[in-house]
Image (tube, rainbow, N blue to C red; front, side, top):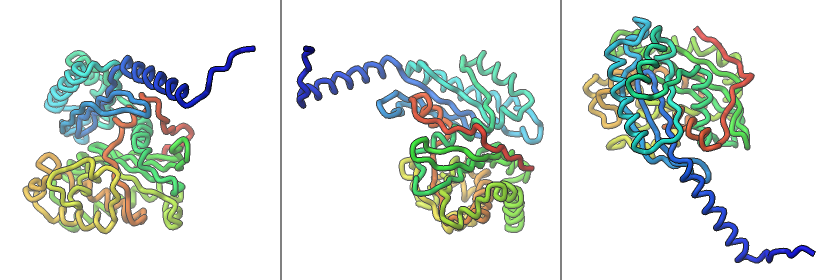
Length: 358
């Protein structure tokens, strides 16, 4: 007869300790991993160490580089924008080296996607920084952003509408909230109307009341077919939809609304923002001068000329989808990449409807 080891508490505890030690050793052997998101306006890096249930951030970097400056007019990345961006990427490469990153994924989005010299830019980045930059599709951008926001979804809702107002584009994702998988994308659309693009098309950072209202109305008209395709407004009436907003405009308005003495991610990420507060802050910023906006600690000079265009997008969202409040996410593509690297569920857009809007 085979001897059966005693299954007492000491034996179980000893086995548990051994498993934890092995797990920690495995995580240490994996080294750090990194996610870099190069958008139209920002270059952002996160470096993380794997832990049992995900990852722990150990380093990061963020700089406004305005890579997409002028792309809407010229169709190509300018030499000045490329030079600014490569200088920031050199810092990112240095940080990844210092942290001994063993696995990294570095992606570029709308500016590089739409520029005629995007591939040349990627080659130059590799030659000058050693970073392997990958231009991803708008669908994958939407998938990674929603993946990064999964922990903010409330399973008491049936659906989520997530929107990401970037510098060069705005993504809108309609998804079913699932208790185990997190979410399944049902449809999405990408508009080449980010805050940089809208500001450049307008020709200035200031909007008079009529110009602002006309922009909000135009955005509602553009988004209406997407709403009708999936019956989003009907689900909102039934209180079945959680609205999630990510990227700089939403987080900035949340910080201003909280009257923070300086931007604090831990206060902003995951907070709920009432639509009345959105409208109040948006109108206040629209009526301020560039210098007045720049003086706010949650805005500064780099966002002061872009934030009003972002407010118009946000007001259009509030008007067309009157859920009453939205959840603010200071997270996105980078967190989505790190989640996938750490073995967490990834949101899939396979089979979803890519809805083209003009």
